[in-house]
Length: 230
Image (cartoon, rainbow, N blue to C red; front, side, top):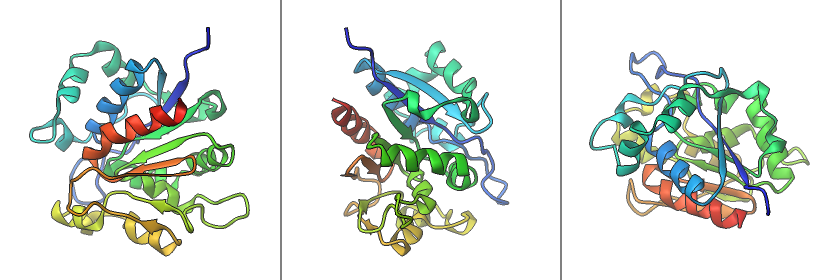
């Protein structure tokens, strides 16, 4: 019997939204919905984060109207909660042991994953090996410094998406952010796509890279990754 395919889900370890005094972390819906999609498709899931241990979840994503049936289910799921509260330390994980990499979004990763040389190298090596990499919401910010083997920006000439400037603006959070992922990816030559209106699902695939725009894209990007693995 074929072994189950393994997906590494990397979460942020960062809990503070700049100097705003607000708390952040990983957006819960983008953890819960893909987690159940992956496990119910028969895949094994491992959670990791830069520091290991408990990965902070964005407080806003734990409250209505941002909760979903899957976030409610996850909160009542001892195995799921234990996995998020006791993530593996990324330095102790070999991405080559996995069949795909998945990065949920949330503002926290702008401060750690997007500037983490280990994460950037891991993504570069996975994409160069044609290993599927899926990123949702703010996670495509990691692509800002990801290079192709020839040294050019990986996103140059590729179609991608991610959390749009207009969505940051609507939350009144743009002024607190280190950078705009939309602007920086366009600056590096990406063909950046957006849904016609904020908060609508939008997922695009370009080679082994799959990107999703926002939390509403979580079920769509999870299915796209499952389909790519199949």
